[in-house]
Length: 179
Image (cartoon, rainbow, N blue to C red; front, side):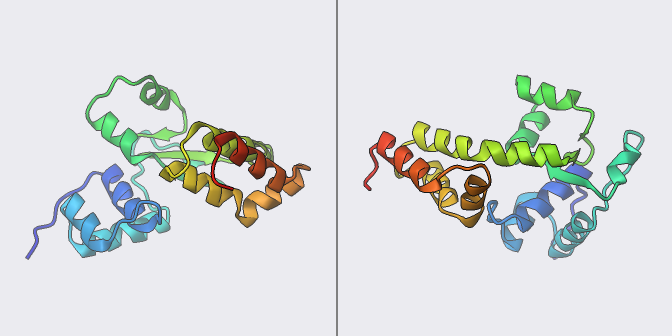
């Protein structure tokens, strides 16, 4: 029988996210092994995460409880850097962010309509940058191409008056990928 490991709140969030997020590709077995927890502990962490039940200590900001706040999990590599005491500037910037919750490893953000519009407006350009700056066949290149062909990308381009086919063709010509 496996002994239960006591995880810190941010580790519970990380375990739940690794299990739930398709991009993390965590299975019950792999997540339990990585965090040295039982399946019961994992499923409790997942349940708490999905219900937004986080540790609310003395640094908890009550505005984070609002229904329009999105709880973004801090990237695993950033958490590892923080654990190891990395002196990266980006990690320091995170600590200075008023919406960073170091206890739970979350950024609690309220997305305004303007924020959402700005994000969508920047996506076509970011995808084109990725295609331009990566090598055909690389994983990042392939992901960018998949996104450039998805309905969301097509609708974003349409909304902003961009021709998604011309953008993609131009990007592929620049990278000299097989057309």
